[in-house]
Each structure stands twice: as structure tokens, then as C-alpha cells.
Image (cartoon, rainbow, N blue to C red; front, side, top):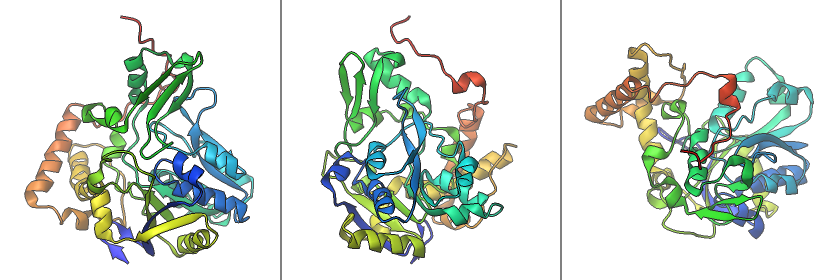
Amino acid sequence: MHDTVWGPAERLSTGHARDPVVRFRGSSGGVLTALGQFLLSSGRVKFILHAGASRSAPMRSERRLSFDGAAVLDGAGSRYGPAAVLVDFCEILDRAEPFALIAKPCDVTAVRNLARIDPRVERYMRYALTLVCGGASDLRKSEEVLQRFRIRESELGLFRYRGYGNPGLTRVETKDGRVFELTYQQLWEDESKWMIQPRCRICPDAIGLEADIAASDTWPGGTPLGEDEGFNGIIVRTARGLELYDAAVAAGALAIEHSATFADFDRYQPHQVRKRRAVWARLKAQQLAGRPVPQVTSLSLEECARQNSVRENLAEYHGARARLTRHASVEPPVTAASSRRSDPDPTSG
């Protein structure tokens, strides 16, 4: 199967982790966590490379290697913020052990590109699993949550963005036992405060086109209306992914609710459809403004743009130019200070 927006698919379905604990703790239905656990328990890989909350600074994320199902479950849940899963990827390849990657679509693309010049990627990375990504917020989004509750980062014992239900509450706990919570709607109600990184606005693949399996939320219209038991949309991209999917279902790791269509994913993720159709015009705005643009091949961006009217494409182009004028689409320079941001003090001023 193939769709201009959604790309290739060997299988489309909705489902969830069969284990109720994994389903409850996962961001949606726990499918990626369940697949990671199954890959380990079946002996297909030695470890899972993924992201999790930093054990020393819970608001931040860290690269993790998990060697058993409990460790994979400990890393379940969304991480809305910077997460450098590939920070030491070449050293991981040096281990010469089979592993699976669970990461953002851009991370998967980076590794697929590396595979063109480093044969160890194909030899040792047996599976690449991803989420359908709404964009990564920068750290200011998390800092804004702390400021709302007048908490310092150094006081944190837990910072959980999602999970423990679908979508689950954002939960903040301090070391001295105070607890603060926000609903998903409260966290994301003000789009001007999403703090999405500029690169995400021109991302040509937020839907995991290069992964073996991608998992999404399944909210009609793209927004949750309340809590539910947890479900994932599942896009099986490759023959390797299909073999894994079928084996995980047969072993009882995944429970499948029903088959799906590309039209279903249009309803679940309408913002992804709009973005895929918008990126060509946004990249043209970058290019004509003299800004660097990524070299994109084989992602059907022009074909997606043709699904828009001329007026819609011009609106995306002018919107991108306006953001460039405001410097809202310019990546900040990387400095030592930006990677070691000071502890914000919300009580000052």
C-alpha cells in the first residue's frame, strides 16, 4: 500500500499493548514499549536504544540502553523536550551487538543515512521503531511548567509528561513530597507556548517514513476529548517490520483492535496531513530567503504540495517568510551555556 502523504505501509491497524500495565504506563497504548520488551524476551536483540527521563535531572531526557523488559518499561512515556538518543551512536555500534532503536523519526533518518557509509548500522541495528511526532519542544516549555508552580528544577523528584492513562496527566513531584498536575489540554492549550524547535516546522518526515514500524495517537480530529484506556495507530512500513508485528501479535505482546486505512490516519492525525502538504512551500521560503535548507529526496514533498490549492501554498510560503523575519524559524547557536542551562528561579522578580 502507498499514500502520497502517509507513504508506504505493509499493514495499518489500531491496537495496544496486551499487558495492562504497559498499556497504562505508555504514552498512548504502549505499543512501542511492548515491542521493545518483545524484542528482548524473544532474543532478537541484546538491548534497546531509547530515551528516558534523566535519573539525576527528571525534567531532562537522557539516552538509555535497556537490556530487559523492566528497564524498557521504566523509560515508557513521552519526553516533550530535547532528547539526544544518538549522542554516542558510533560507540554503540562498536559494541558489535544486535539492538533496536526507538526514537524520533529524525533520529531514524539520521541512522539510515549513516548506514550508507557505515555497514555496521545494517549489521547490528535490527529494527528501527518510531512515533508519529508532533515536534520537539525546547526546554523552555518544561521551564514554563515549573514557573507556573513556582518550583526550581533542583527541587524535582519526578517530571512526567504523559502516560499512566491516555493521554495521562503531566505530573510534577518535588523531593519534599509536593505534587502538581496538569491535564494534556492545560499543557498544550496555548499554541503560542508550545516552544516547538524551529527545525520541526520544516521537518519533511514527522511520520516515520524510514522506520520499520511507527506508532501514533488515534484521536479523531487530532485532540483528545478525555482519558481512555489507551490505543495506538500502527503503521508497519517494511517487510522486516511486518514480520516483527505478526510475531508480537502471535506471542500476545500486542492486541489488535481492528485494521485501519490511510483515511483513518487522516482523521487521527489531520495536523500531520497539513504539515506534509505545507513543507514544500516552507522550504522554498527558507531557500529564497537565503537560509540553509535540508536536501530532501524521495519524500514526495512536491506531490504533497499539489494537494493544496495555490492560495494554501502561498499562505504557507508567506507564513514561513514572516517567521524568518521575526527570527522565529532560526535555530539558536549552540553554546556551552545552552547545553548547561542554569536552574531557573521562578520566585525571583
